[in-house]
Image (tube, rainbow, N blue to C red; front, side):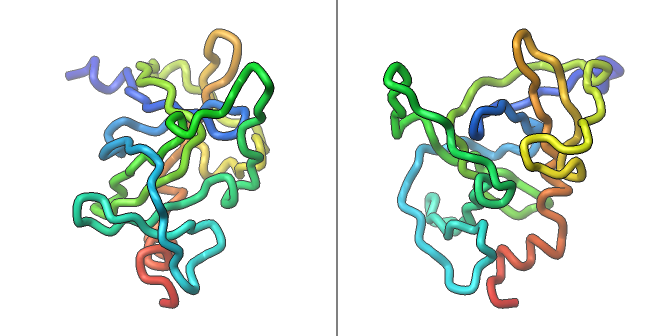
Length: 162
């Protein structure tokens, strides 16, 4: 069992021009983009809700939450609607969807390779970043979903107007 503690499995995705990762144990599923119904009085970064097989799930826009520009498009890089989607996270028994620009892959990361985050990174405060891992030509930013969605915030998201 000691091996289990040295490696981390991360679901990686693109948000803007950066590569992010979340612990695979927090990911319930990955779904294609679908219609999101707005919620009155929700925080500005809550896009709305979706109905996923009878379950109502709030959808969070991390672009808005962290002031991240959407992925840049170029003539060679035609944005395909099918690339984007939602990662459905399970945070302390609550399901929340986050909008992503592109799903990447699941990668194993040695815990010893994770470095503390710099003071500011792409507009995201370090309190939401678990660490940073150097990958071939870029950095993988590991998000701490527990800190991004603490108990008070979950209540605001799940019960707008509360």
